[in-house]
Image (cartoon, rainbow, N blue to C red; front, side, top):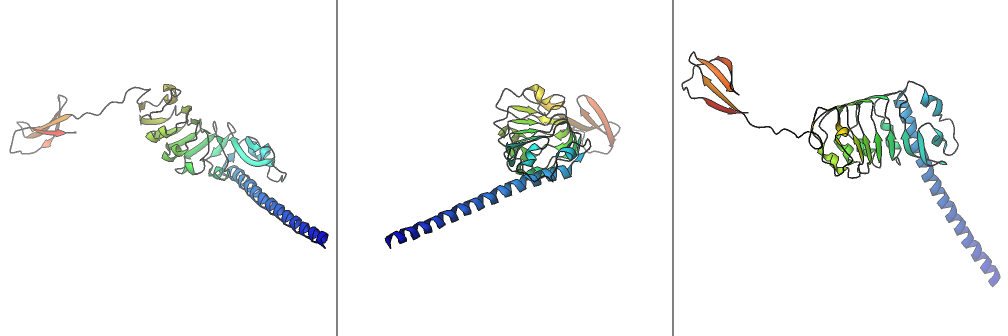
Length: 269
């Protein structure tokens, strides 16, 4: 009886052990499937949102293949592991792609590098760009036709080591918050239409070349920014009853008005 009880007890423990292993495998598979599906949807969305003028994506990105890690063989895709469909880097430089910034990258939740340089992408960069590039360390959007302001929230991506926005049509100021990117080693906004004072980075690797051909930019390492000074404008009445404005020794006639006093008025601007 004791031996039978020991066997029964062992069988009970074995059943519990097997059940625990099956549960862990099930949870693991659910997590893996979710990750795979998310990254596959990421690439499907990117492909659908871009015009593939040269056919590179159409010929390489074949989603009919269901083998494990199949997206890791796609053109421009690097995975954490060749047999696990978790996208590490997306490198789609110089492929003749048209369209706007592909928001589908938000589904590649493990992404650390994005290179869309030397294409024909246009439009504004998303204002909420930080929400889907949270862990990106390298972002290269150079040599496209992106326009508008540089998104303030881009500089919430504090893991960034490389940020290249040169050769676009960006305008306005570079937000001072750019200096939050304390890991930044490579930064370029050359050949845009930017203006105002450049951010103060705590690195010597960002030089004047990073800002080249933006004539309205100023501040170290560029030319000093000119401080705006107040100038005095004198308004007075001439002998013939006309109101005259004197600024920098130049007189401008504004019109005719009868004044009760001949004392000049000083107006500051």
